Image (cartoon, rainbow, N blue to C red):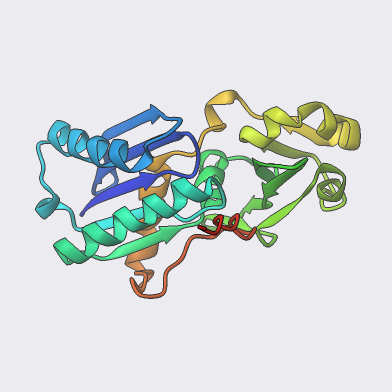
Length: 226
């Protein structure tokens, strides 16, 4: 099974292609503007490197958020367009679930954090279960002081939000806060594709008409014309 994974929740845009769980391509590019044009180019480049065409893809996976409003909107629109044109299924993966997968072998609770700006983070708590990583909280958007109230034991923090608010986290939690290596910090299209494979196999295909980005906050209103 060949899966095309898209990660556009941050300024590190990524495309990965997996074949039966094996990574064929993992392309990532730091972008500031022009998500849509660069994403299509990155998809074309990734398919070329893998020696594949869109017709060879069995499933498409996309990061749903939270994260960049523009990036998420473009990523999902691109994914839906490809799925409609190629008649392939789509699986949406929450960005924090994808980020958490980097710490899936940890024996400690883990807490991936994304910078939500305004002094807040996007967060969720996870712990290794009997068979897989399990989410133990809702997806949250909150300040570090509020987050600390959810932490009862030593927990591993990582992600862009952990880097930005590291000193505040230590100030609130002291020795309860452990920080993972920086290699865990960036959302990964490989993780999105890996999780999509598991979810697709248990009937996790999305409805193209109803799937929406997971913003957690309302997107900023567009200015009125005139």
